[in-house]
Length: 313
Length: 264
Image (tube, rainbow over all chains, first blue to last red; front, side, top):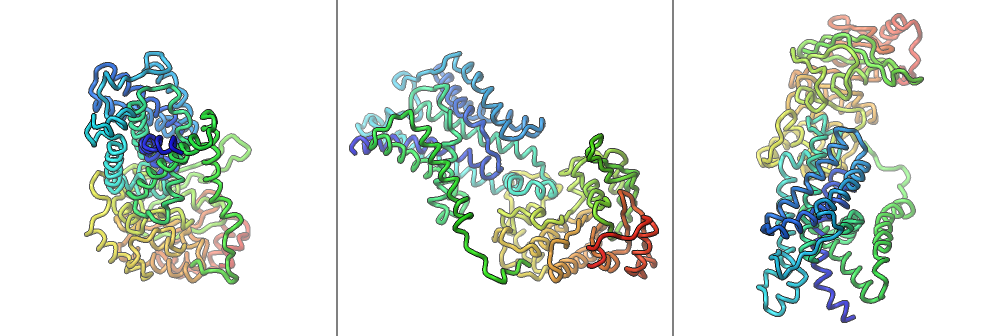
């Protein structure tokens, strides 16, 4: 139990960082209705770009921005494969993800991982700061939970503004009903590309933060990212769906969903002593269950329609 | 206004499912024309509308609106000239978005979509007034999700959206066919009201011969991808269902087989 409590701040920080990734995923999965598998690759791209730039002497903020841009380029590639080349969205994502395996290795100088020593380089978030702030070696605002929470709120605010603009609304319409969107003069292909770019930009940003936090980038760090992201989106919706109707609150719910996910995973590790190699299996089972529940509910527990029926006029 | 010259469209060319949906069709519409289109299943009515709207490109021929050649324009670019209402009430609106958001999207048809606010307070007032003309009480439900509306309400809203930014051409693809008779009549009355008010050039497909006769100033009948009957002016005013059936038999060399057209 104490090991679980000790690990809690770490789980919260990680959950918040992955929450940004999940918010990015929400743009494609919920708003555009595309299951975008690019994220498994672009998450690592963000980490790889960030670590290499910081090791090269780059300012941490610049590194984060360039990581975000790199993610957007990955999204652009998937978008072009899907819209201009007519490849189904899911396959376009898989292709980009596969290509990024090589791309990410190339970025990291053909090595499978790169470490970032927090003693030598200044970073925005680090696992180390969890204890440093408690000991008073760092000011309070360097506490990772605080830093990432502020970042998350800023990102949600920016997205809330964007999806309320003419362009953002047209992007939501593209996902809600492409026929209607085109009939209203909306270039649905352009919007899909834009959405994929925005989404993967956030995913890479999240990867960049995680790399700094854990102090290394690894070629496998994005594996299964889409499942974790989906878990966060779905847990957020299931737990807070009734409460949070506003768009900004819905995004916040995803961040909370990611936190819940990491706390639960941490609890499972700390309390059951399960071999952490089983975590991916566990994640897959959790997500499969959460995705099945709404379907089962409809199939077996749907309320019967009253005789005579409702007027549909 | 609308100038269609010799357009043809064949689906699944070269396969066993080859189907010539449009066969060298030409049609000229004048400003303010309200044309009703009838014909059996597979006659090419919807194909004609989709060709004009740009759902896909035609194989041959050209389409002009007000002297602008739109033959090669993609669907979303043609939308600046064309308002549409579909047969399926689900197709014309975004179910997960609010009524006012749908209207705001329609208000910006043909305009560049920028980073300005997607909807302004002044617009809301305008939409309230516009919704009042529908007489469905929707003006009190601006922020309700469109998915909560009935099929008839959605068609009426789609109609309003199509006319919100006055289109050069309004295309109605059997927009009352999926509704019950009472609702269909109401939506049709709204159609007549909006078309007359804005003097819109309109093409309306219908399966209902009586509706086709009662509305518009011109009627065309399609058969196997061609326009076989084209009636306007006084002749149109004096049309009867019996006479239409005779015309069809003469043009096609067979009795009209569609029960749906006879019974409605």
